[in-house]
Image 1: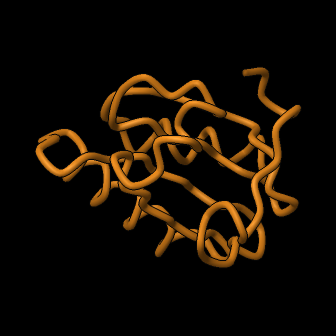
Image 2: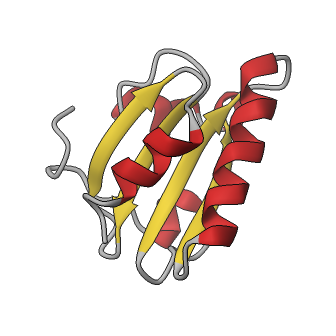
Image 3: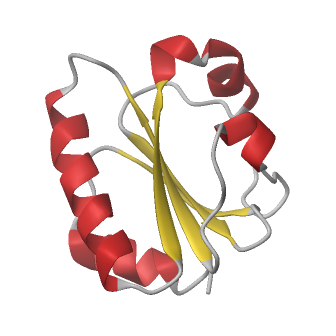
Length: 106
């Protein structure tokens, strides 16, 4: 999947996008790094105006996982205001990396 070529909407995500950008986290129930990722993304979303954070349970959204070629959790997608994927990363991110990735979206 090429960043910038895929766009996600409220319909696929089940909730509204952030005004300026959205951090989309794919998680699974028994994933320890997913919990830490949730905290980091929530902190960044609270710090940066207009940025939303959506957590998606991978097991409940297998078709979306296949479409986006997501193979592990946590996987984080950074969407711009139009829902286009501008950055993608797997594994537990550092707060500084998330903030830097948002630069491509806003």
